[in-house]
Each structure stands twice: as C-alpha cells, then as structure tokens.
Image (tube, rainbow, N blue to C red; front, side, top):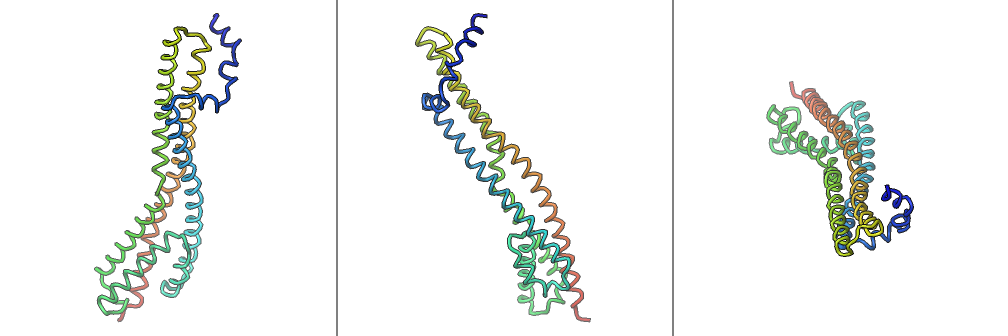
Length: 242
C-alpha cells in the first residue's frame, strides 16, 4: 500500500523527464537498439509509400491496357499503341511475346502464319517468363516489411531486458530500491519496447495489405497469360496460308 501511495505522489520521477532526456541518459547498448529500430522504421515507411504509389500506378496501367487490348481489331495493328502504355505488366508480356515471335520468324525465314506448335510453345514460355518477372518485380521489398514486423518487437525486447538489467545493477550499486532509483531505469528500458512495437505495427499492417493486393494482381497476370496466348494463337491461325 505504501508503495502504491509513493508512486501516486511521485509522478515527476518519470513524467518529469522528457523522452529525449530518457533516451540521452540510456546506455550505449540501448541507444544502438533504438538506432536500429529507427532505421527499420524509416526503411519500412519508405517501402510502404513506394509500394503504394507503384502498385496503384501499375493497376491503373493494367486496367487501361486490358480495355484497349479487348477493343483491338488486330494485335499487329494495336501493338504500338498497347506497348506504349507505361508501367503496365501486360505491356511487358505482350512485348515479350512479340519479341519471341519475331525471333522465330527470323530463325525459320517463314511468315507468322506458319509458326508451328513448337513455336507456339516458345511464345507461351516467353509470356510465362515475362509474367513471372513482372510478379517478382511487384513483390520487391515487401518481404522487408515482414522482416520488420517479426524482428522489431524482439529487438525492442532485447533493449528492454538489457535496460532492466542495468536498472537492477544500479540498485545493487546504490544499495536501495526506492522508486527514485528504479523508475527512471525501467522507463528507459521500456522505450525500446515501445520503439519496437512502433516499427512493427505499421509494417505488419502494410505487409498484410500489400500481400493481399499482390495476390490479386498476380492472379490477374496469370489470367492474362492465357488470354494473350489465345489471342496470338487465334490471329496466327487466321493469317495461316490455305
């Protein structure tokens, strides 16, 4: 009971110290932990903002591409217009298909209409490789958010445990366990936990959000692979010699 009263009557023991003062009086190890967590937080927020704008721009470009693609009269005639839609994953896949097609034509010396099944398989492989490459590009850096979400709380906990050890060591040196001795050390130690959670919470929210968005975009890329291959196969069959 006396301890509770002492805490209530001495709020200035911790509250009177500014956050900067607590950090400044922390041990070198605690400062290193806080610096690491600050770095994690800065990089995570940079990735969060970068992926937000990147995925939004890519989705808009893909939507524009698919509308133009489905209104086309001919892939050959629409290729230049479609390939100029920047930031579209589909435009890259279309370009890869045409590059492979031109390579087959140059290699055989024949017209597009006589590309055989083996050539069509090569075109399908080129589309598939381009789609996988685009999916991997969209997923870049997102794994760092998962790393931050998983590692930051433990790094913060490490700093807290170390700070508590210092606080108990201070008690041993002074030979007393009064609130004035214990409270500042515990407060300094808990800053690391707060910093760890502060870095982890935005990272885990963003990771879950982007993972769901990427799963949807990757499914759309997989669907477009089949649609593009079918369109190419259909047009090649239409120009085939009789």
